[in-house]
Amino acid sequence: MKTLVLSKMDVPGLVEALGETARLIGPRKKEHQFVFGQITKPEQLALEYPTTILPPSRQLFPNDEPLVRLRLDDVAASREIVEGEKTILLGVHPCDVQGINILDEVFSDSPPDANYLTRRSQTIIIALECQAPCSPYNLCFDKGTYRLEWGYDLLMIDLGDRYFVFTRTGAGEELIGDLPFFRAATPADREALGRARETQAGSFKTRLAGPVNRLPNALKEAYDDLLWEAVGRRCLSCETCTNVCPTCYCFDVADEVELDLVNGTRCRQWDSCQSCTFAEVAGGENFRPRPSERQRHRLFKKEVYQYEKYGRSACVGCGRCSAQCVASIRLNEMYNQVLGG
Amino acid sequence: MKPKVGVFSFTSCEGCQLTILNLEDEMLDLLGAIEIVNFREAIDERGHEYDVAFVEGSITTPEEAEEVREIRERTKILVALGACATLGGINAIKNRHDLHQVRRKVYGDGAHHFPTEATQRVRDVVPVEYEMHGCPISKREFLQVTKTLLLGRVPRPSPHAVCTECKTAGNVCLFDKGICCLGPITRAGCGAICPTYGGDCVACRGLVDEPNLASMIEIMKSKGMSRQEVEDRLTQFNTLEPVDLEPHFSS
Image (cartoon, rainbow over all chains, first blue to last red; front, top):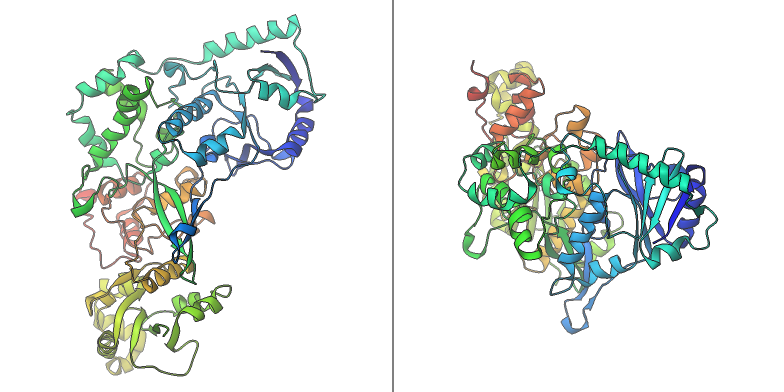
């Protein structure tokens, strides 16, 4: 691991240099909010952003992704489509890096997802630590996701006029190897880093009424709680909570043919456990016909099922589901209810 | 032999027919796959038997009801095209008023010459194989449905709400800009075209299969909308889907 320093004055130069080597994706302003999108000019980059509408993990798992080029007259002539290009994700907040780490685990699980993994293997992540929580709904302090130990290639920490930069991987070091914008960190930079980290630690606070590791059992104990009925009465089943989640990965697959009725494409679309037909099976049986059951499932999936399968919660505490819910359903409030707060 | 297709129009602005004619890039391929034998906006000839009849517009006169029954007898597959045909749409707003007064207001002293009736969806008059929603329909959906029918399969409507397509597009939510939008309870399929260009969704594709109207009405109320405003919004295209506002506004 190297410790470097990047002056903020050199960020435009860095953006231009990186843009020449790969597709550069970073936070951009969209009206009064932010989205991850391609950065082709330095002025498009908005590194000082609270959060984005969609998480950067969706860049690795795009909606309507083509999977197979179909031949209806000769199925054996159908060909799989696996695409990817060298991509740099710049300015990714720690919670979102951990969202990508969780998707890495899910899509590497058997059977491995060639589309995701090909794209991922060509992606470099330049993370950016947050100095303060971005919304009243963040659970990143409780979840321990406001800082990063691993899962990134480079990590930037804002020191005011400059960024402190940690390199984590060989790919990260190689990326900036020949660029003239970085210098080795001095003792004064390290001191400034210590001060920044102290300020940062003071600004993040616990928002949960109990220890986060009690969540799996607390949820299990609350399986029949009236909380779910109350939430279900408000839920519109619009699927926003899952579409904006950094770790949701469910998808549906559909074929579309061309007008020659011979050639076609099989694509996958993001799907959602909140859709009223998601758990419908042949014969019309529906395992979760009610919004209350679907909302409960969403929380159990994140905190119980994935915890039991992979050994960690699949909620990184980014707060998007709560902040963007039109019906004001707040994850932190539901967690606190089951934790007895 | 190519399947014979007819396009018919009842009470409507004929915008859905125009949407088909606007398929400029795909028109030659489309004409390679089907034979259009009746299309008033585009050709003079008339056929008499159809494999697929696309029917735009709602049914508002006894003549129209008679004519759509005749089309039904002559076609194997009937697809209702656009909000007027699938929901009653804007035309159904008159159903909320006294029909005699409506006629007098529109036709004055000559009202008795125009035997207009309460607006009906196409499916209220004849059986329909598929409903393609929207005001107007989406080009993409028209092509998808046509190709699916040509393959002899059943088209699959989107199970999602407009919100899903809006999120997919990475749009700023209109609620975050203080605008009340019906995207959360409206059937997807339009690509969230209105919210993408800053306009609120007016539910021209009808409501999702299981709309949580009680919650949506409470949200509209919390944004300061009056009973009349909520009613106007929810019925603009969906008069024929009755909504009970009483429990939400009785003090």
